[in-house]
Length: 256
Ligand code: NDP
Image (spheres, rainbow, N blue to C red):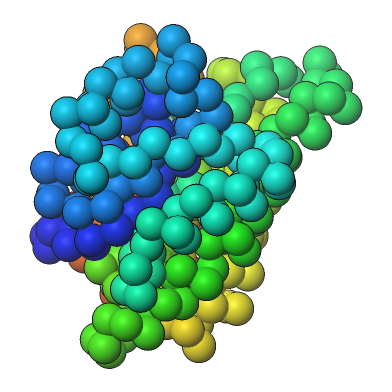
């Protein structure tokens, strides 16, 4: 598979789990401007990311971004915009998410609002606030077609958002607000793909596999390294053929 050659990328939820590993592997892929966004860059949860940024000044920029707060998204976009040149931003990875552990019967209004704010409304406003930079990148690239090296949005989704899968699944985990919000994220992918087609900005949903992280737990069959190697390999090979699609970290098409 092709390797990713994006020169600038924004990763949300970059301080731990899959987001942190994405920053590490984007660095290995020689991405020259990595905007590592997290809600508390000075907090204890961001220590590993701070260390990494310190070791790679000028390449990794820490950005304060709480995806559940539209003002924070706006402010972060202003900061990133001031550091980007006329070549814009090639890649957004909407990775930050929450998983309130609730069933259909235990979910509260607050759980649903929390899941939707973080998992759907956050990615929507990230796309909207950063859109001028994606458009600039698409224009500046001069390449025909679509690719993540040019301009793209990757929405990190989950197999548990798939209606096809969940209908026949015994659902051993309490994923109710999570699954429904991520199904909403998938529709955001479809709308984004439709509305940004003319600007040649690629957009897909991507399931990273079941991965050992705080969210995935210790029983998960793969680690962050394996998942993100797959993710970067898959997104490095995307073209307009996959635009508006739903894939997993091995490149397999997922059922909606
Ligand atoms: P983790 O729980 O390990 O990490 C979640 C990340 O999201 C943290 O960086 C967290 O930051 C951040 N986050 C949560 N809320 C906000 C917010 N309001 N603003 C900014 N950042 C926020 O999860 P994973 O790394 O496992 O998951 C990454 C992505 O992969 C998610 O989209 C998840 O749904 C998806 N996924 C994961 C699977 C798995 O098995 N691990 C399976 C399928 C999908 P903080 O430290 O501040 O809390």
